[in-house]
Image (cartoon, rainbow, N blue to C red; front, side):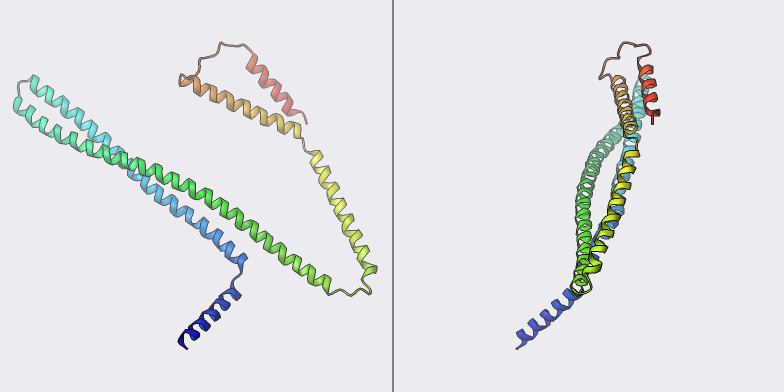
Length: 245
């Protein structure tokens, strides 16, 4: 008897939840929840990065201390002060050990930071995928609702008295559609596609030249022989083409 009662209560609860669930609203909330996780993830990554920065500063300090103590040990030896040299050498040994520990911690922190960035990249890809799927599903749901309303409206029509206005309404809708399509076509034809293409090509050429300059600065590419007026002629030609509308 108790088992039957529990089954009845579960079935009632399931029916209640199903009746109040709106897939469209739930998907929209899922999108908001995914977007809300991005600032939290950025904050966590910033903390990891801050740890790396702190360890890097400590590493630089230890290296400076090691250099200074090494110089002091050598100076004391040259001055015949073996007692001071021994004191400095003891401190130097401690700084070297601290530097080694700090370097290990720094390597681990850098690895953690790289992993955090990879995790964020994977999350962003998954978030974008799920967001797109949810948006598509929401659009489909709204389209289905609209189609249902249209279907209900069409089913409520009576044959008598409808034919006289049905064809007329269809013709008006088709006329409006044709007018809007013509306006769209005219708008598209008025766009200067050639100028946009030329400007895009000019930006690509400029980007290629910047990459070549970086490669030459890095020693990855030999410096080209100076060519007079070629680049200027190209820029002038591109500039003239862009101005044509």
